[in-house]
Image (cartoon, rainbow, N blue to C red; front, side, top):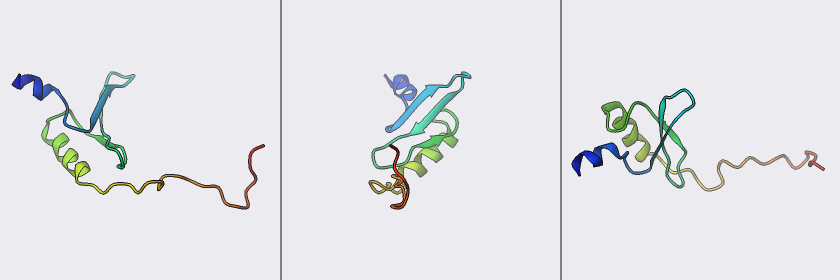
Length: 76
């Protein structure tokens, strides 16, 4: 049971193997920006970046939305 917990990434971490075979991990939490995490889960550099991302400030809702200026033409 204990070794199984070490293989599972921390909360809010998603990972995948990219097309080059490199494992990639991201901190993804509702209201926060997606943050890439270095190294492998539970390594010292990974956990330092994870703690920093976990303590970060949430993104305000709608902050990432980009609006066109009022004078621009709309696509028809």
